[in-house]
Length: 166
Length: 258
Image 1 (cartoon, rainbow over the protein chains, first blue to last red):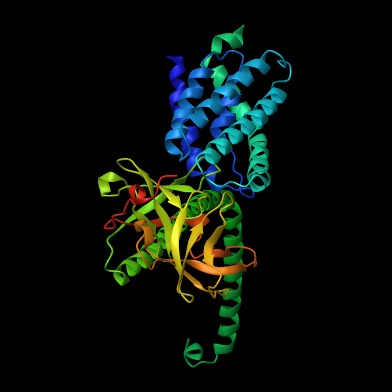
Image 2: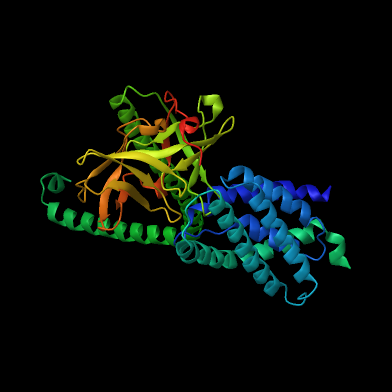
């Protein structure tokens, strides 16, 4: 039953992303709230449902966005893989792990988006994409990482209260 | 008594009553001052309560003012759009609010709150009173996704009003809009108006797109290029109009296979 908390959280994240975050530009880049929240959720030690969250979030973002549906699904799954790998290695510095996962996850998402759009014939100049879109997007995601981690940690403790007692 | 009635004591009477009045004033003023002093704490308490009530009223009214200002803004936009639809009676419009943008920074799409239940179909052009916005890319029952003309995959056939030449308008990942495929012999100038040509059947003709702001022409190029300033401010899109009586033509089967 506790896994049901994912539904409202994911829905809320995608709605906020589409209605608010996507309107806040830094050059041409925007933050990716679902990705950052997913990274923060996957980094919580007691969480073992991050895979389901990744697929659900990816499908929902793919449904809302004009980009191919598999791009966010694959990217978010890779984010979870990165988080699971780093969780056991830099467990004493969770915020550092959060930054690394956010950085690498954003890069993966942008690479996949870029490749998919280029293969479908959309003209995307590499310089503009890198300088005006990818780098500002990475910066915004890193800024969002700290509050997102705090919120998801609290949510994790609320959903898994027994592990906190231990 | 006779002397008093005769007015012989009037000066002495005036002095006496004047002194009485002064004395009464002195007592009265001191009493009022004392009363104020004694009742002051109760007044301060009631004043504080009243002040809190008034502050609450001010907050409520300020919120109301903001809400009304927002409604006035929306009403002005709607009034402008109504004027626009009256000025273009050949088209049937359906007004829609922009409720979101594409989550991916690579794409320039907006989401509107009208869908197939309102007669919106894929391919329908979307405009504002200022000019062309884009066209419907995907539709569900109560919402639709609109591809803006600034999107990198967008391609609009246009004509330059002064030069009477056709060209192609393409978007970019940064949201800049460029004219391509302008013939080298076309005489274009900064400030020329860019309109849809209607070629290809994707958009109705003569919708305003923007103005030429910069021209790039090199002798060894096959075509000229130009940068266009769109008339629509895409960062402040709130309400748009979908042209619901326009049936886009799919010319894909007519195109030669690569």
